[in-house]
Amino acid sequence: MKNFNITAKIQICSYDELHPEEKKLIDCSKEACSRAYAPYSQFRVGAAALLANGEIVTGSNQENVAFPSGLCAERTALFYANSQYPEHAVRSLAIAAYTQGDFVDKPISPCGACRQVILETEMRYQNPVRIFLYGKSEIYIIEGIKDLLPLAFDAIVTSDE
Ligand code: THU
Image 1: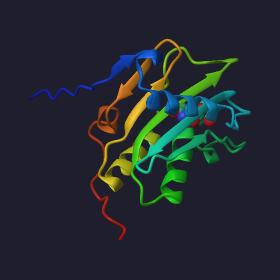
Image 2: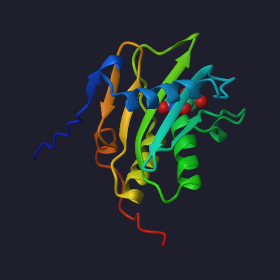
Image 3: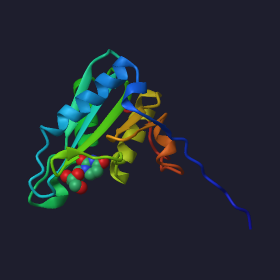
């Protein structure tokens, strides 16, 4: 029997270490938390996607009394970006979360379904999505979804043209 070890690369930094455009993207994801509809979880998530044309598109979690009908912030932002600007790749995605009167101290990480959608976005545009996970005490930077979704299912994705 053989072992197959998988490693993930995650950079940790502070807000002050970021470039102005990276700070702006994170600020947009934080602002987006205020537009969440989260009456059931009281957990407000914001996502901001930077597109290849320089546009920033945001999304927030939108809950529903029939729980599975709600949608995470990341997918709200990416589906909006891909539907409004289908010709522009998503270059990076920032994610922030706000609960109990404050932003989370340690970053939260996208759920499995959102990771799969980020992967599809990368494949669709043949471009890795740089991911910023915001926490008050530290920010994680991940260069592409492969570090969050190893051994991903990507078997049958093909062009829709
Ligand atoms: N949520 C997101 O929007 N993104 C994540 O990365 C994790 C979870 C939402 C789903 C639900 O509305 C609330 O946060 C609590 O799980």
